[in-house]
Length: 302
Ligand SMILES: C[S@@+](CC[C@H](N)C(=O)[O-])C[C@H]1O[C@@H](n2cnc3c(N)ncnc32)[C@H](O)[C@@H]1O
Image (cartoon, rainbow, N blue to C red; front, side):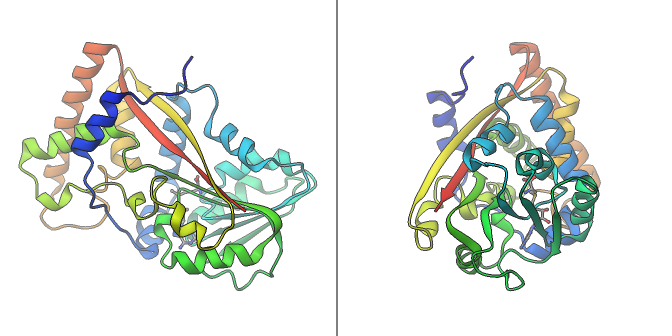
């Protein structure tokens, strides 16, 4: 089974439909709206895992990157509900875990998830660009998975990671290309066009702020060696409903419902979902499934 899901046709489509302009959200929006509870993360983690076709999971990709021997001290910036940490923990039986997140609700969920395990865990509520509570040369591994686009001061964050990372340690920063999950954006933008929606909704994912495609120069200002390890997958849906949940709850209608907007009523989003559902249903009827191709990966910095 191939794990290279990108085709020239998808690359051409990306050129055509993914805008250069991208959404931007503050850490406060992340804390108070997206991650005020674990719903968004729960839906994403369920769908990414249950509907994948790459036999190697994202967690397998990370384990390969991190090359853990079992005794490392690991810091996870923006650890969310601890889904990734739970899976890495058995590989850190003699080590330690420190999880940091700006959102208390998801941090509490992470603490609950790992409570009582044999690996010592510390939980810190804070922002990834202020690690002043942590000493220099304290960690063998630092991770920042799918969170860097929320961090207010990227330069300060990377300088702080460099400071707390021991010599020989690895910083793994995982993010997407802006054309990851292209098919979701295609049905979304088509629906917006059909409805004559406001032009400023046609924006790419907030990950455009530091994506897999543009992040290397920023990281090279702080780390001597920066390597990109890509990982692709294709989610396949044979029923439109799980995709609709992923699109609505997991991605706030490709960010259109991320923040209050008086132009956009509940009726607007109901109609938007109907336009999206129709396209997904047609794709399933034509091809047997609706595909969402992921183009993601990690920067490994030393
Ligand atoms: C999409 S989730 C990723 C969670 C986890 N890393 C994963 O991949 O499953 C983004 C996380 O970053 C956190 N976050 C947002 N801004 C942050 C900041 N400035 N510092 C630390 N965490 C932040 C959010 O609260 C949320 O838990």
